[in-house]
Length: 496
Image (cartoon, rainbow, N blue to C red):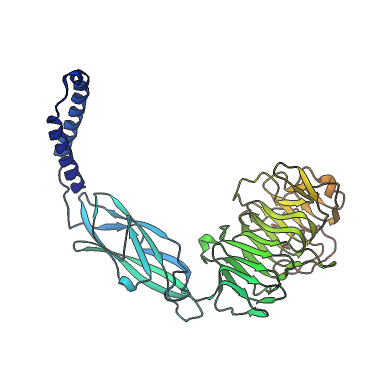
């Protein structure tokens, strides 16, 4: 600041000296005199103010106060290769305060120097050593930290430590930098070879920029495998995908920041897409943090569904958990929850079968206007005019559709094509408008299922209106593989 005021004072002095040399024509003097007088008075006041500013007083006897003693990054994937820039951690922010009443000149350095995996930026200045940074009395600087970790050739996350030092004179403060580095298998923008099997449970698989299952190819993911997907990444299936999770060792697919803080954040990756001809069998799997969890555009071949979901959870998706576009989908013991718009959307018709599923939304990712369970047998233009219709059939049994709106069914149906509701029984709906369509078959309306909590946990409480409503068993286990007992509970979870 002292340098700034010195330069400012010199510039103003030059302006004033220059202004006294200006010769103003007589015809303009009367108009200009008043303005020049005001301008001269203003500059003189600024100069007098500047002349009164004292040079800052510095001290070398001040202790800097750190807002935290440890910056912890949880788990970060190690580098794909030693020269690559992917992956990189989230950015951590903290502050360092000068607690004295004098200016200080502080030095900052990372103990590991240029070889450290940690990088710092202080008030816009980057580098692992920053010297003589001026901090005003009782003022603070903000420090940003990132890390890129080297491969460690271990099967489990390894703790990587370093330290950031802040020093004024002989006074020194220390902050610990800590992160767990986790080696991974990387798949970058690749076509997965036919008959590929992912089975390594000790190291995760990380997909970067997309992975593709070609037509007539088979891709298998075995129990206990963890998969992480980077931003702008999708898993595109035009062949056959089989995911063989178990109740004890579920398969997990989520965004590529494996930390607790991002567990419920949507839109971290694109999601899974089953194109025309693509088929899938997914069991005991958790698919989270996508834009669209799963979209299936595959029409049924004969009477068999193209996508079969069992004991699977799709949650925290920015737009939708499950979309069928003229799709053929069968799901049992599944949870579709907490999406920006739809837990499920059957679009342009299709054939959909759900048994013992829970569709719920309390996410508030977006301010949705419609119900989160959507069905349509229509195609409309931007003005809402009907262009075409497609046959739609829904079989819905023993399932819950619930959320924070009074109407959670969003239906757009035309009489020029089939809009069939088959075997709709023992369901619990939150709906005001569709009682006639789904009523009369042991269905319940607007009776609170009393979930354990409405922030992601959709197990049932003991007082749930979904308990003990189904006289006989159609499935003997629930989503988690726990036993069902007659009379059974509605939804994906059996109260234990």
